[in-house]
Image 1 (cartoon, rainbow, N blue to C red):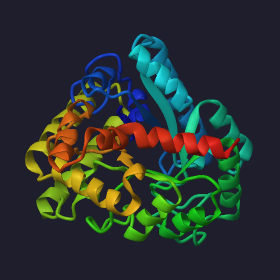
Image 2: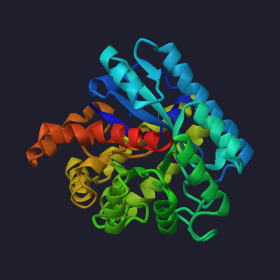
Image 3: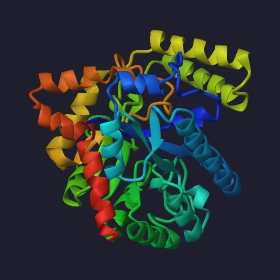
Length: 360
């Protein structure tokens, strides 16, 4: 049973990627998911913090439509999925389950009605913030506007509890995290983060946060982004400069996704990044899983790769088809198959069931 709690693939669909075929340089498509024995994933509707609210709402709806279109076009391979029970049925049929998340609460603007509408359309979790404070809460990258949740954000937490919609704190500030732990009546999820004790990035969780997640019966999906896995990543000036150049190339690609020259430049840059920059790999991912298991508990840890949302991947895990190397590393460390089944997806489906049950 393999379910990934966070992929940014919807933004790639806007760039005209066909998920039904094996795409060169892509982290995720349906053939790669099948090759990696993946049963399903949460496809996140990511909107940048710089986007105005009306634009964010429209963009989120465009991505949402693109996910539905991809499932309709490939109905023999995948289906948009609303519940763990539906995912179990899809698994029996050999069909991939496409759950939908929303990364950044900006698209709901300041409207609980819009929140409910996105939930009705299939959005199973909402990452409250991205890289910037918003109307709901403070983000890890800023953390200066509200001192945690805003007054509206407290209403959002209560409404998400009532709906059975998972609250994701992957980009939240520390104070936002603790506000949600205190106020939420349902378990909390952190769909794509790592452990701050092993890598000091502010996006990662402290030991106290990991313990609180376990006590709240929640979930953390370990992120594959090298910058969250190791402080040693991109410390050399030439590596940092190359990453900055890669950001410019990708920005140009996003603005003109159908431009063949921009596509080639982006693909060439991907090859350079992976050839010229040292990257942490499967060992470091397993280290973070170990640490999270020790503090949050075995039943509260999974994977949230962030594939299609990261410009560079961990060594040896360049796309979703290669997940077997991670399970092999966990076996080498003494995890049983039953334990691996929990980490690879069982825990994610279980926490979603718990959140749904709190709304009943």
